[in-house]
Image (cartoon, rainbow, N blue to C red):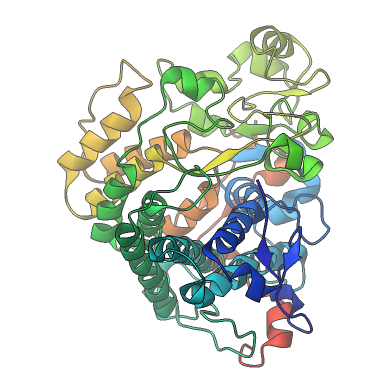
Length: 502
């Protein structure tokens, strides 16, 4: 996949700049639609690139792992206690640490390069329909970036109904001082970008060619995600249904045999990584892949919460992807959940292709995410058909449409559990069932912490002695008001440079 991203001026604002694989003068990049298409392709590649000369900062994969999964309620990096402070949500008020800076740094790089396309593509040489399509793709990237920034750096919508500080809405090529928006203004800009993108996609008559490129369905899906977080229920339901068009659920075989490193019909949008351009030990799967050769995975596999998996019936075929021990096997594990006895032997016998030769074995470890090539490479989904089912179901519950929500939940589950029957629950119990299956189905895909934040629910992790499976250092309760109400402080790099942000 070729790369061309727009080189921007550098000085005090270098944290907003892009350092592409091959910098090109903006006037050259934007001179024709063919070259501008390379710039859009560069935005796609930026989602699986190394940043800040730091191992683990790998574009979008870092957001999913470090900010969505490991910080949440339902997953742990077994025995990797050195990261407990980050994953226990204690770093949110530290404006200079890497964990605070990285998402701001990364998403504003995407925004800067998207803005260069948005602001200049109209004057490029080429067919008008191509200009429309490329502009729509750049708008989609910008909307997605703004949405992620709002999720991380602003309060949950239910706390203030948008009447709180938002983010810096850079919608042109200026890198000068810019005041913070309100949260409501930020969502309005996200909606506007997506409305404009949708109109341009439709008018262009073009469709995307690759799963990692933005397209009309991706714009619909981002709209649904943003609306759900904003508690705009009807908008979320409408766009979740539109996003699913042209896609279908994975088969059982696809789900348990590579469905999360090989593109299939369920992937609405994903991140592409190929072996000839791999970032090796920096890759997404180098931190979560059960069969990765990295020490980070061999020594510290990722495990699902015992309390979550115990609620899923044995008849659900997706349960195969987790090493659920018997009571006897679990009793043999140490306090951290590691096995060297019967569970270890079963894992080696039943999951020979899911473990590296020297991998440690822990109870409840996952086999959902497997590397496509060593040490930790492969593509992965960002938004799936299933997520849109749960999104619409949750929105329908808030709209008082329980029958429709039950139908959507049945579609999401019955494909994988032939014994599952349409839920007879109502009210809060039905909502809890929708949340349960959303947590299970989307496990490890970077939604966990974000969902708990918007739900306003406490993260409660328990040790083995308490009936769970978390290492003592991770076994904490994090209430909605804790950790700056789960809101990352704006990095000092922004406040040092931007005089309009305190």
